[in-house]
Amino acid sequence: MSKQVDISVVILSFNSEQHISKCLTALYDALQSAELIGEVFVVENGSVDNSLECINQYADKFGSALHVINLGENTGTTFSRNQALKRASGKHVLVLDSDAYVNAKALKRLISYLDQNKQVGLAVPKVTYASGNFQLSCDKFPTLWGKAKRFLFLKKMEQKPSDLSLVSAPQAVDYAISACWMLPKHVVDKVGMLDEKIFYSPEDVDYCIRIWEAGFQIHYVPDVSVIHDAQELSRGFKLNKFHFSHLAGIFYLMKKHRYFWGLNGLYKRIQRR
Image (cartoon, rainbow, N blue to C red; front, side):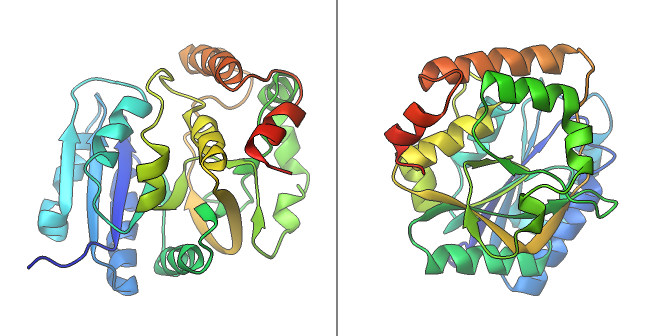
């Protein structure tokens, strides 16, 4: 009889040769140190570098726990991750970016926090850059004006201490970027898959809204941290296809959830205060 899987890990790889080896090494060490039985799904999303070769080098290390889903083309962030989420069988699900490096302390803390706080449907750690600098990984739901400020001034915003960087105890947040999400499997089952009408972003915001709509909360747990060595595909004032895709996703998100400028109506619908 097979053992219960403690955690299903979903990693999306797209031109991740620079980071994926470090991500998988850190994950393997964390699972071993935390004594967690895991299954790892790496979705290869049409990379044109040596990402797939790097991933396949871990076949012996992870053994049958490693499942590589090679899609052969860039299908975006939703369809691709859904291929793994549909196969996840663990008690908890960890959604992890290929440039995020977890540790045993974070894994154990997030799992125990969810087990002790049944109203929480998603728990996230503090996120830092590789330099150790604080990364703004949680925020209020976006409005058009808020996205404009973040688009134009994010790097300047992060140079100033944010309220979140000063938080030391767990607290509820509107949404968290999907660099490192820990969810109970029953929450994934209730909320469903990522919205495949969003190609690249903001699928994380949409999913967080849906978690709130399903009656769960999202909590930031700052006493553990992970490194997110962000590739920053859409950060800063550089117009490219990722920005245009993101902007299209923002308009779709706001139309879907029936808000544009203010959040009062959305908060009332999801009972978020």
